[in-house]
Length: 323
Image 1 (cartoon, helix red, strand yellow):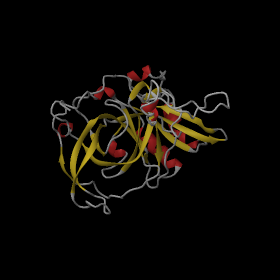
Image 2 (cartoon, one colour; image 1 turned 120 degrees about the vertical axis):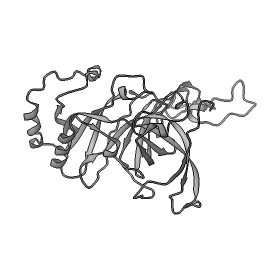
Image 3 (spheres, helix red, strand yellow; image 1 turned 180 degrees about the vertical axis):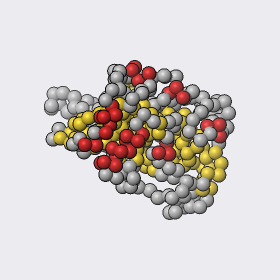
Image 4 (cartoon, helix red, strand yellow; image 1 turned 45 degrees about the horizontal axis):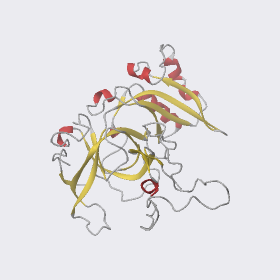
């Protein structure tokens, strides 16, 4: 019952409610990209305890297109008995015109310089930035409306985080401002929606025996006589998929600059050609093609620590049109 209730996500973009604590200089704790598709690679196995350590292995990989994100605002929070409360927020002097489709954008920029200078003087406990995607730079996504989301800032003192946030306000940030090749990330996305499905597909229940009357793909009964209602723990048919899911500790195998070197012949199926920076992630991730995928610093890091990127021997760019 860890995933109940299984109902549709409120938004096609995943929500992040917690950010990890890191050391070092201030940096972004998250990023976002678009899922282009999957392919396979042959690489040198970097896991020292694996039976194929230091040998060539074939692995499935997922490709994400990660165009720059633009920082449109800074938000300071104060911890209260009822959770985080907004202490203050400030927006960049110039905002993307398409942002007005998401929320009422401030019309005047007067006094923002004074507000920026006094930003660190307020009483606050956490610093975050508001960013938005730039789908107009992506050929595979038909929408022109940017997605607005919040990213945490970690490392350093609170004052250093505020200064870092002010230094990137109104500017573009790239994937390398967030992570590096060989590092681990948590991946959050909304899974593929499958509509209304029966109990067996939705919950994986056992098929009834063949002598059952009229049906095999239902549950045996809805529960005991008492209490006189159907409990929520009873598997039943309903909406399947389109749920938010988090996959922890996914390895970034490569961060590429030229999309032509990874785009298959004919383009990715249902996506097209990659025109911006891209990342290659070991394994599969939730979500359908074109979906916005959010990345986060690993909140419970496990696995092998790598100081450099794994060695990729071969990366398939064969056409996926016949797949």
